[in-house]
Image (cartoon, rainbow, N blue to C red):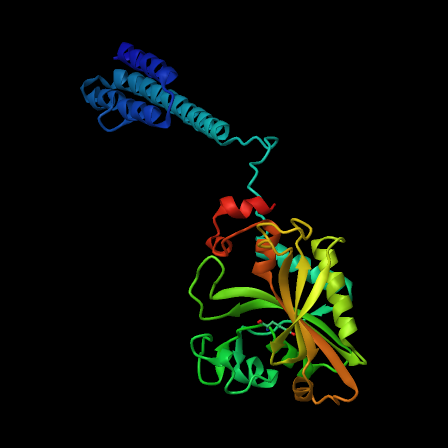
Length: 340
Ligand code: DAH
């Protein structure tokens, strides 16, 4: 029986040396010390022994059990440490590895153009004011001297929300808001979105962008208007740009004009961009109508002013040679990324 015990001890030792995992170690524990284990079987068989043998064998069996328990404990520790080590190795991160570069976004061509236009006027001392896209009929039409019979008020041109509220068709209502909230000298521009009931095609979109301008002070004349807008054109399209003003009509200005710039592509000789004329229409402008100044409670004998409005998409299309306005709204990255 003592031989058997020695054999068990040796075997347990040998098997434990082979064990690599917690599960394998635990199997060995069950095999030797479990209820149906080899050592337990021996202890059970001791009843048949003489009292003397039982004492010595019992002692030895207990020693063997203690030794196996000790070896098991050591092994459990060892496999635990090994498992931890393996996990550390697996989870190790290289903090010196360079990061993955995410692609940088680019500004939208409309934003770029609007910022360029705004910067020119900001450099001339204009401040930026903003107005809401949902506007009153009063601010969008009545206060701008466009009475109830004005054609632009038609349902087919304007998105009405209620009888008195609409999506602004122009940035000009910001003139009204400014006249109601500021005293002269007034010198503001207002970039923003406008809306019209238009079916989209290469040159029309139901939503587009404008930049509005308003200057009001004592003694402002048409010469100030021309000088300001001529300087703007030279800064935006190049110093050799020439301008000309053609008579036009807007309800909120008198007199009114449209400004053309000499074609920045051909210099005025005539090409595809200017459709052979050498000139490109860029904006609407005029001297603020006295009826509009009166909305702000101004003395029209003392104060005069000029205003202008231009379409951002139109400028962007001309500058970048884009021939379909819809390209601006599709947000195809292959298109947008060209404006880096
Ligand atoms: N609001 C006009 C439009 O949408 C543009 C415009 C013309 C604005 C003349 C002005 C102006 O301030 O003076 O067509």
